[in-house]
Image (tube, rainbow, N blue to C red; front, side, top):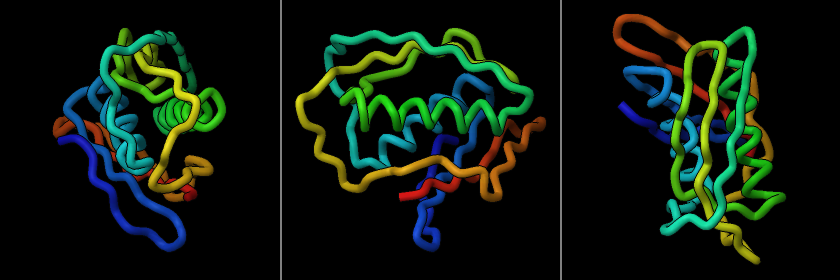
Length: 135
């Protein structure tokens, strides 16, 4: 369970597995940070709450990871941790703890989360998805 980064033609794939929705969304976020080459910071000074609602878990995960890309790239926030307040296939409410930085050194830039081949599978064995990132 967790995440695995997989090579993909001119992009990167992130495979996420989890037993429950909260862990699924948290693991997707941690995987995104790993693709960036970021380690969660310590002693968070910023706390942001975000809510997402959509008809499908694919839309939720794209919105969630896109928000993190925005926060890292534009707001210069290095997430230190995530408190999932509510999670399900059609909703996510999360607190992002992090630190703002003047400059963030990234191993690679992530341009976007794509819908290419995205399918969140949910069943008795938990959740699984392969998420393609445009890098």
